[in-house]
Structure formats: structure tokens, C-alpha cells
Length: 72
Image 1: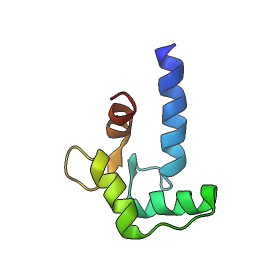
Image 2: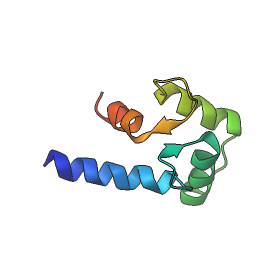
Image 3: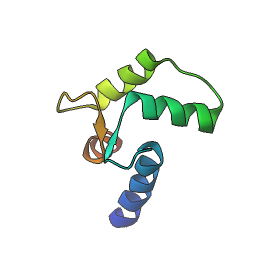
Image 4: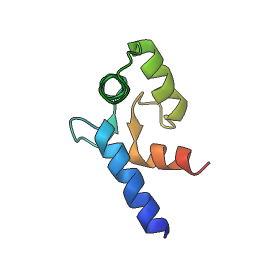
């Protein structure tokens, strides 16, 4: 069961990782939110969310950071 949940989470993460480099940037997050929700958020708002999940200080969100946040 855990593998199914992790696989689903990875698909969600990959939807936000527009360039497929394994990292979600604030700009990628902002673009996907605009596309999926039809609402605009600022770059600063997007960066604030990414920074809240970023554990290694690179100002990007890896799948591991995303997964850890989902499991906390």
C-alpha cells in the first residue's frame, strides 16, 4: 500500500517539475498553480512555500523533501 501512495505522490511531484530535473522551483510551482487552479500567486509567495519545505537550503523542493512533508 505504501508503494502505491508513494507512486501517486511522485506523479503529483512530477506534474510540478516542469523541466524534469528532479527539483521544483518557485517559478515551476507558480506556473502549475496558475494552470491548474486558474489563480495567480506571486513569485515571492511561491518561493515562501518552497522554502517552507526545503530542508537543504537550495531554495528548491526535491521529491524527498516533498515526500517528507507529506508524511509529517
